[in-house]
Length: 517
Image (cartoon, rainbow, N blue to C red; front, side, top):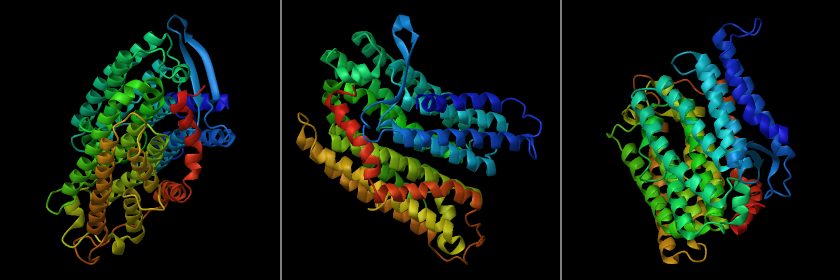
């Protein structure tokens, strides 16, 4: 188990180095480009197999205990250790991350985005995978920061070199926002580590903030919270996200929504809730307020983009929908209750699966039509995907109703639990304020349903014989291979939520009660 977790973090880095080397004779296939793309599928597939093996070997009777741990002294002068471990909170995120990277590598093997060398593309993808996996596995504050920052450069180049229109501006906006947030976050992490005389996240969580004064906790929550809020993203620090999603290649958008946004909310749960509980209790009402504003703002922005004549970009619309969905995650965290935090963690996974599928579908739709402009796609009577490409239309409708929180699918449980958590927040939090947040969040679910149903009506319905291009390619086999796991898991998590909640709940209960000891 120790080897599996360490292997998952190291294998993508080694694979990235190997991707830049010449392909050995006999492994080039039809071309060196094909060989390096096959290499990316192989490495991410091996990492996914290791993640599945780690999940099967995980002691599901003790999900609150860190397992597969490694603890090695790295910088003795600062007491920084290479401390790795996985519990019921991080295991689902590790598994989803490994799955999404494999599906993106598989999709890219058949549909590589236009850009420079495939070698550089595969190498950047693998470095990005190593950084995201490490973020969910490390148990040292400074290692968390290094892993958190490790993903910025690969994602910057994926957007800037393989993206679409306005990719340079979007890439610069992405990295400037996240770097500025990270600088502030580092100050907060150093404040905690120096004050408590340890950077070990397990020891800090077990102490539950007793070594930190109230003033220290307030400063730490403010500094770390800003950095995490940028990555989440929380309104009003979200403005980099729509531009980045609109310009990014398909797999870049999938990974940005499915994995990178989760790093911010994971930091709130793993660091701020157990390490600075008093500081979080002070800022929780404000966090909840920003969360519900983000829910409504994201939904209204999507409604505006979906309206006929507004030239709304479908990728941009889904990006704004992420602002609203992540608002539910933040609302659950702000409640500081087991119900709310479990809902936040469930919504994290559901959003990764569903929005990852949506970006896959919209990317494929853009490849078929040459645009993601909703007015162009809809045409005079509607794009009529049900008639022109019935399987594609059915998948798009499925992803949309899953995203709006249809009961029986994964999107329902996380948002419902987050609202329940806000309805009855932790002791000491203002109940009246959180009741208001609950009402506003519930209204946001109606707005979400409204814009997604408008999108389905405009893109999937209409006269299939109308318009200049009635023939649209239906789902290809490689697309089925990349999308089917996301559909299956969305249904499985919706019908059997205990599969995920059984992992997270014991870990959350112990985290809020005094950390994982």
